[in-house]
Amino acid sequence: MESKTVPSLLEVGGEAEPPDIERLDNDDVEYEDVEEQLEKFRRQWKEELTGHQSGQTVSEKVADDDEKEAAALFLMGSKLEQEGALYEAVSFYRRAMQLVPDIEMRVNFPMKSPRERQESESSVDSFDVEDREADLVMKFHHMQLEEKRLCYPEYQQRATHISALPVEVLIYIFKWVISSQLDMRSLESISMVCRGFYICARDEEFWKLACQRLWGSNIGKVKKYGTYRTMYLERPHLQYVGCYISKMSYIRQGENSVDGFYSPWHQIEYYRYIRFFSEGQVLMMTSPEDPYMSLPLMKSFDTRSAGMMKGLYKLSGNRVTAVLKRVQVQETTNNRYKRNYRNQKNNSDMQQTFHIELEIQSSGKRNGHKLTWVTYSVRTCYRTTSEETESSFELTNQAYPPLLFSRVKSFATSSNSPILS
Image 1 (cartoon, helix red, strand yellow):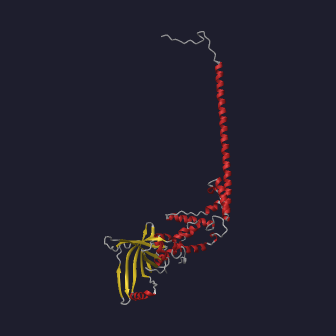
Image 2 (tube, one colour):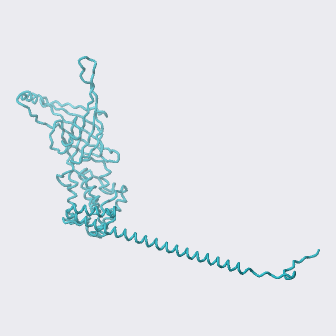
Image 3 (cartoon, helix red, strand yellow):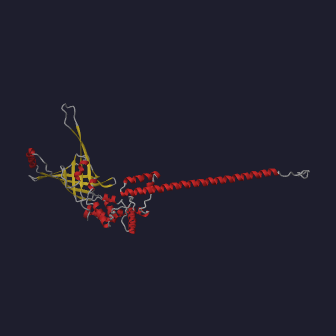
């Protein structure tokens, strides 16, 4: 097999063609044009970017100037408001809000440093877990020891602030807030004012006095509960700043009409009120009037009203035993009925004593807000014959439903005496 070789251009007698110089020059020109266009695009892009940043900086500067002017106007309005010039203050407030609508949230008051504003925070979260609450009390206590002050005024004022009072005076004021009626709910409300008040309200002295007032010598040992406050919250006891109320209703037949075709029926509703006092006194009243009309009569133990019963009670565990007698009300009569009134007085020779026993229960998560009937009896003594009779009432759920506690704010508007040991 013969091998064949491919002849080159020189071997066939031809000359190699030189490269096309004109075409190469055109390619270089096109490449330079692309580079120039790319460089031009880069310059334009940088100029646009620089211009956008400068424009944004100018707008931010204008916004900062408006905010500064609005803050100055708002602070001026606040100063005028403190001085009593309300009309001028409103004018400054309006001008400030026209510049920055939410200037009130942005302005920083110069009268207080950020540290002082942090110290005067008044909101205190409520904790359900006892150990977390104890840690919070210890934390606040250490902070107060470092500052050596109970509280600070949130805003500057001309009048003397309550923080100027000694701690002993504040504790005595808190005892008046609790009062002899053991208004511990008001003490809890005070604890939400600031850290210092929170620490004072958690002082074991207050809760120990309350427990001693409730159970006396039967207070028991505090080790079971850990603290006296926990004992007060978990152990069954009565509530004093309010009244236990139950509502009863029944239907009875009315008088028949003349023609005999119509037989009316009436729905009768009435209320039973029981109020306990921390001194061992108790009031009980049955009335058809609604609570708005009847509760003012239960404010004081010295009240005298028809249908009212007064007595004493004793707390033993979760049971309350009370002995009551009817209040003697002297009725005013005219001359026409004096003879009948004298005859009725002479014929009324019996004296009734009521004995009740109630069980303290919880209503939901509220300790001591429900009373259920255990026993209810009446002992009647006839003075002329010295005869005594005793009868017990049938405690049906319809006639004697459970009594639920209702807090009455008017009972806590004033204090007669502080809580004492």
